[in-house]
Length: 440
Image (cartoon, rainbow, N blue to C red; front, side, top):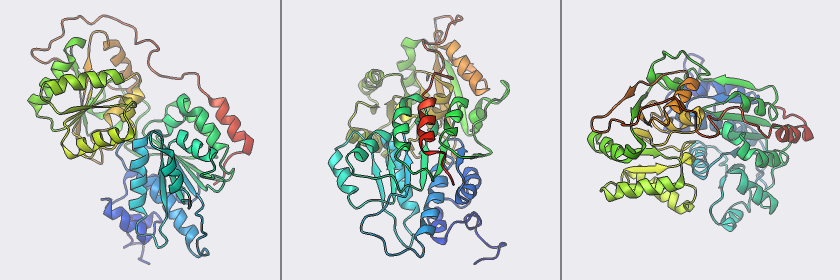
């Protein structure tokens, strides 16, 4: 054992030599702020709420902690049974994030003395291959909630031996859209378990919901985590504690957004860009217009098959594809290495979604650019987003694309900015109460 003066930063956090080696291979010479803050309480067995901006190493934070716990449990244990018990469950909201998290956990666990099986399951693909993959069990399962419930209902997996539950993009999983599925899943888990919830944003309503599933959680906010509020005079590039993102807000009439997008891409010679639109139809429509203009563009949305979505991502990552037109399903967890630019062709409904969208760039300490198109009709909405983020992005105009419509006071889009909507909190609390609170 090294002396305290010579031990490595990850050794000081309590990680084994195998995990230290894997972390170094993933490019972590030093723990990131969220890793340094979250790993120690997680290794003590505490429930943890971890908040840090996108691209800050949250996956490795909970991944290293749960792998260290499983490695400790395996030390001195009898020879592994024929069927592997699922000891750690990681829930994620999207297929793409499931794949990415599974890959990360496999890489982090590659040097463990007793290799762990990591199974990744999600919807949108055939069920039988995933049932076959689970036939011998898996110590770690990464899953989207709907497909996991389907497999559990078919007795392809049992969850009564789970020691650690992780929610990645926890605020999304605790939101109304996943509340029913999450309540049904937690009812299948043992009462005594550790829970680790991680996200870039934790609105107050979501924090209230989290308490139903946690026992005396330790809240860890990395120094660069999103802020609850900040003076409106804050630097435009300091949104949500992500100083590496340079933000621009360009005033343009709605009808001129596609020509302006072409102009910016060509003039600035952006090699790759992720463009967010409001609907699946818009993603296909704008992508087709860009292709007609000679630009390599493709749509990315929930109606595509899993194979088609993976193909679009692979082509974007390889540089074969220059522009990806995506709905908000690409706003969370999607890691596109070295993505230089994000464009909000349509503004998101909520300030939280805005944070996640622009977080697709400037990841892992890199710099990035986020451009938002603001029209007369959406100016008031963008002001609300700015207010919720506690910052101001100066408006600018591009020669040849100056808006003709005058900005007038307007109400936000129907439904307004997402805020404290009526939730499914009672269902989550009932599910937790049915078995009592989890323990570390």
